[in-house]
Amino acid sequence: MRYRIAWITGTALTLSACAAGPDYRAPAPAALGVPATYDQGSATPIDEAGLANWWTRLNDPALSSLIDNAIAHNLDIVQAQARLRQARESLRQAHAAFLPQVNGSASGGRNYSNQSGSDHWSGSYSVGADASWQVDLFGGLSRSAEAARADLSASGYDLANVRMTIISELVTNYVQARLAQEQLRIARETRTIQQDNYNIANWRLQAGLVSALDEQQAKAQLAQTNATIPQLEASLKGSLNRIAVLTGQAPGEATRALETPAPIPTASTEIATGIPADTLRQRPDVRSAERALAAATARIGVAQAQLYPSLGISGNIGTSANSFRDLFSLITGGVFANVAQLIFDGGRLASQVRAQKAATDGAFAAYKQSVLTALEDVENAMASLASARARKIEFTTAMQASNNAAIMARSQYQSGLIDFQTLSQTENTLLSARNSLATAQSDEVLGLAQLYNALGGGWQNMENRPSQ
Image (cartoon, rainbow, N blue to C red; front, side, top):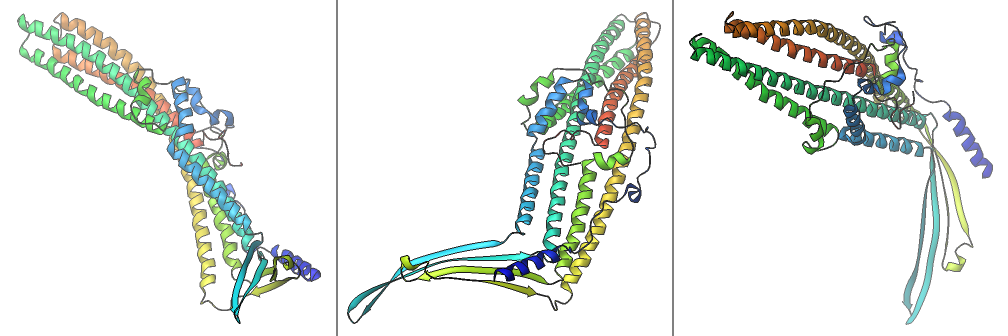
């Protein structure tokens, strides 16, 4: 009996080395259409340490504190962490399928009978155990575990992608909040000047120096500026509310400290973008898509293994007696092996194999799409950042020139050398230039955030980080 069990087990383990289905190999960058260099960037090696905490380069402690809170308490991240734990348990379940399943049972009782007017009691006791083991004859269980491992890695990268996205969204809303505060400051300063202009126009009207046209134009200009302030305040409030939710808190008190105006963060200098092949390693969404492809490939083997014979080994051991003291006097048991082979199912299992191959083709297309989209994101981010920096330079010049023109126009209007229409046009140009410069400054920071996000920054130092 002992030698028979050893022979069955050895034969099963030898056959199980022949796993059904294709062995997965990650596609080469060339097969994914990855170019050697970016169209707009340089091939300078990427700074992985700087990529992990890229927001610290903005030198804004308030922003860094908010990001720390978001990483710890954001509910989207909490949900992704829960999905990661689910995937980890699925892998444990897949590994458990390799082990035998053992069930035990025990029973005991007393039987009563009354025969010929006399009471009679008898006992009945039994103890037993059953074991079964499904041998991984053609690698179906191995492929299932391989797919579960890939799913676990994909869930880890999904968590990283959620974290990366939350950081980017938080930076965006923070910058938008500071931009709204800057535009509010500009609007209120402009309102003060325009109130003075209205007072001057009203005084000149009372003195008979101008017609009512100047006074009405000044009044309209002041009202238009006043009308922009509530809209900017609503925009600021919306950004602050979003920041609160991103940090896992209710809007209101959580962002009270941010209501104090502060400057728009200053963007850092040029960053190293590396080469496009780095995207396959740094972007967690791309890594997740690659793991999904690996899982789909492994499931081809799971489906193919169903077409081949299955081998199961089972055994039992037990004892029974009429009295407890004799329970282990006689022990019986047995070991059995059974082989099953599908003969006819109308092509159902073969169809499942073809369906899984189609799913794998789709997973490859999704992986390639994620790679190309990532490259597109990097190119677009570099273009946006370069555009913002170029506009900031020009708007700086425009703001300085407009400010000088406005100073001269106010002096000339007070002296009666120009009409109010000329003054109004000059100050509107200044207001537009100041707002445009502030927007360009915020766009530069947002472009930097967009580029770091496109490069896959913000997850490299996270806990439980998926293996590279």
